[in-house]
Image 1 (cartoon, rainbow, N blue to C red):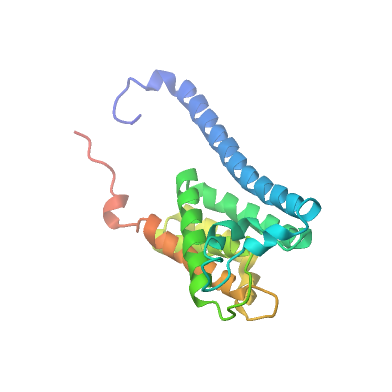
Image 2: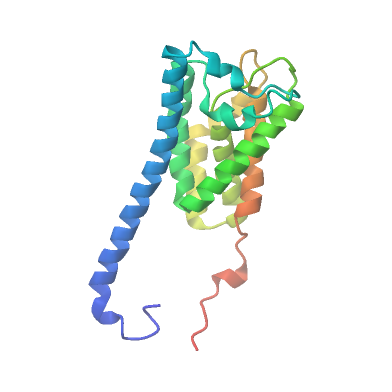
Length: 217
């Protein structure tokens, strides 16, 4: 580290420039990931709407059926139409960006856990057995759950600030847990739970020991 010796003092400007480049590269990489995921959703919806006559929509999560089990993987990328996709796109981008402040690896792992845990929860426990659950909203609710749980677990100022921003902008999402016809409230609920599970698995609890400065030998 720079404060240990004097050999790095003459290259501070270069180190700062390198750090800035690294941060810029990280932002660009994060933007590419979210952009690619969002572009995939839009491409699939355009293909389904204009070419396949909405046939892809049938491949969502169908509770407690063998045919609907693989919908756990497909459902976040399938939507009932462009209005449905638009309503999910903005919160997906915002909450993804906030989650990416913790790193790309953590975001990807959290997303995988949210999709798997949330999707399996819907498949196993959703009330209606003849329903077809699609949409990225479960993923979105999962990211919110992850950010809030991470703030509670990690207790770092940055993590708490990010969680508060998410809560301020999207506190009204709690109404998505209310049962309503035509809305996959189970997807919202189990997605949110999946986010909490992801935070428990990926976020390290801040301890007094971790706040101590490293010993210099």
